[in-house]
Amino acid sequence: MAQRSSRRGARESVLPSRTTAGNAKSVRGRQREAFDDKKSNADSAFAVREHEVRKEDLARQSFPQKVFSAIWAVESEVNNGGFSQYFLNSSAETASFVIEALKTIGASDAASICERAINAAFPSGLPASEEAIRSSANDFPDDVLDKLEDLDQGFFSYPNDVTDLLFAYASRHPQEFGALPKPEDA
Image 1 (cartoon, rainbow, N blue to C red):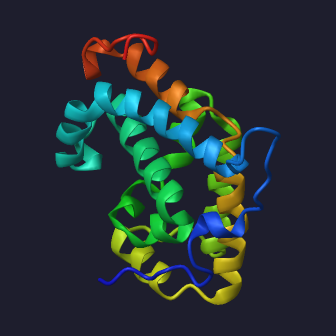
Image 2: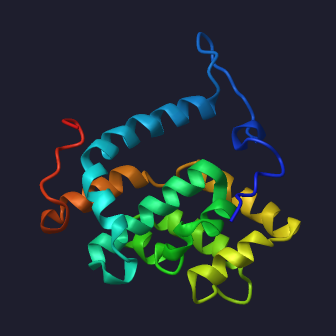
């Protein structure tokens, strides 16, 4: 299935650019760098386990593995192409669980944004299968895409530090993920 590109171009282009004295980087650029730094630390710690977990069907994963997989999918997809991309790609498999996963790690604000995105995208209720979610996402009308783009901006603002919360969660489950380095050591 072909990916649909954003109707409005690159997501970063819709964010206002603000500068501070002595630093011409946009606020979004600094936020992206901070996210990328945290993400690269988490990536190094999680890369092998994440690859193994993704090979497993979500239904066969343990609860901690499902939490990890759902959060990894939503964070990666929404930060890359927004909620419309999250629902369009195979990450849609995690949509029925992502709210619970985010609440499990203490990311209640991010969970609320995801819940609003699901409700905006599927006002009659989330379809039962990944295929049905992806099919619906392929035909989202403009008004749904507009609502999702607004929610993308809320997710981009990073109301909870999902990466740190996920790292802490995985650290509390060494039986599932192995011993992880401390964030300052990663």
